[in-house]
Amino acid sequence: MSRTPGPRAVSRAGAALAALALALLPAAPAPAAEGKPAVALSQQEAAKGAELTATGTGWPARTLVMLLVCGQNMIGGTNSCANADGVAVSVAADGRFTARLPVAEPPTPCPCVVDVASVNGDGSTVAVPLKITGHPVADLPAESGTARLAMLTGARLKGEDGVLTWFGAPPSRRFTATVGNLGSAPVKDPVFQLGTGHGVFAPQWEEARWKGTIPPGGKAEVGLDVELPAGAHGDYTVSLKYGETVLATQPWGVDRPYGVLLFWALLLVVIPTALFRLGMALVDRFRPRPGAPGRHRDAGPAPEGAAAVTARLPKVPREGVPGPPPPPLPWFTPDPGPPRPPQPSAPSDHSPTTKGPL
Image (tube, rainbow, N blue to C red; front, side):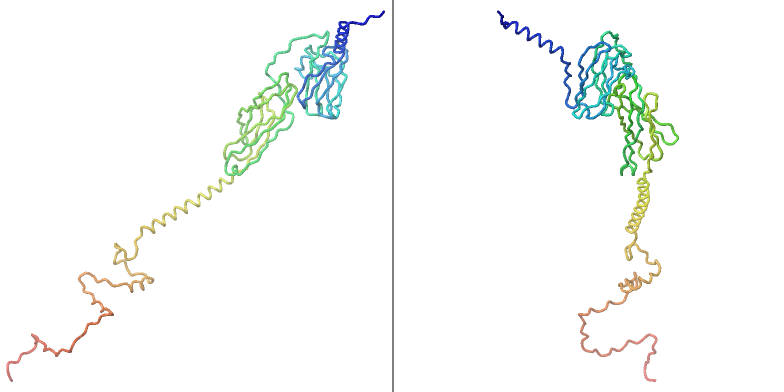
């Protein structure tokens, strides 16, 4: 006679099946933000010589990714990885890939990671922790704070001169260069030095801080602003230095500010002209007028042009000399009256007198 299992036995069997399923399923990837690459491993701990399955999501489509087993959290770059046992795989159109990676023993002790980097994509990198059974474990080296920045691509000066620069405004450019971190520690907010030299003179260095972090083995495009003094012109040289190493040098030819020369030329013409016109206005204001009080009477003969004007002016008699009688008014003529008989003239003292008949 068969016995029907009770409810307690059914629940125990279900719990056992669930535990077995969780043990066999691969570890789920950590939730990643939309558009960011993520990688999940089939096992979080494996022995040397085992094989893992890595599943990636969110990677650039149709690119190549490289998977490496590295020690010391890949602080020393690829020198701490098992490069000979690396695996390369292509990403599908939906941004997913699946790769089988052998667990090789890295040249450095753990903590270990599986480093996944995009080779020909956008340079994305993801490090997934991995515990290798039997592999030695050591503490991570303390970050010394020093880094090895090297020049990866040529430097460039971006920007153009404006209208104000033509009139003596300070010329400015943006110095850009791509540098890489070859050291074992990340570089955060590195302080560079920009030097500007004129002709054969030594450059004058000034500190310039770039905001950002360059991880070990990573690269970044650095952009720094450089400015020359007002009115600068000629051949200049701009240099970029980090620490004691000059990373790049770029020539810079600055045109002469011809607007300043034009301004001074106009100023030299305008000022004398204005002074001349002011002087002529003062002379015209204070010079004596013809016929005005204070003009000398015996100044000499008048010019020919003024002779006709002088003839029409009324003559002023001199002091003590009677002038001619004024002409009669045209609208009044006195009545002469009846004619008068002639009057005998008085004898002159020199005329002979007669005292009787001769």
